Length: 233
Ligand code: DX5
Ligand code: ZN
Image (tube, rainbow, N blue to C red):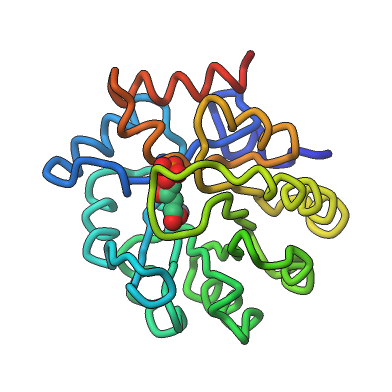
């Protein structure tokens, strides 16, 4: 296993990144919540975009990405759970996305979409639902900057981690190390102090967490620290 990004993109001497998802933030105080996450030590901010078609829920669009951009200089990690994402790449990138991740289930021409995202100056990610076979990702690995394993059915925060997705993380860790070691391997859904270590041990190095950070009873810093402790312990 290699960690080519550990020193380069992270000044905190960690070999992993934490990307708090604002889906569980208090939207009456979004800027403040993002700044608290940043002060707690967040590496990125994760923005979950849902269209009511690909997933039943409707969440946020480019306006919110633009608001996040004004609230922080941290990289914005934008997860598009939408049909026909190719219609909106420019909108999200001009709003300030640094990483734009699209679902393999929505992209029959994945190679073209990844290239387009990169041409627009953004990093390109691929993700897949828990029920989708992981080997569908392989043909596109060499084109991607990031691969995201969904460890819950996309659509809501606060769900339980699906441990049957752990073998996908191991499989992708091996493939990434073989094909393109600089690809970041991210996991999203049900990440909390009980589950984060298993995902790390399988090879994930970027962790999305919404409820474990923003809904922690002692606040955002305590939620963030509870994740860090499990990775350091
Ligand atoms: C789920 C979203 C996740 C979600 C994670 O559809 O993609 O990013 O916000 O929420 P938690 O961490 O609470 O499972
Ligand atoms: Zn997400």
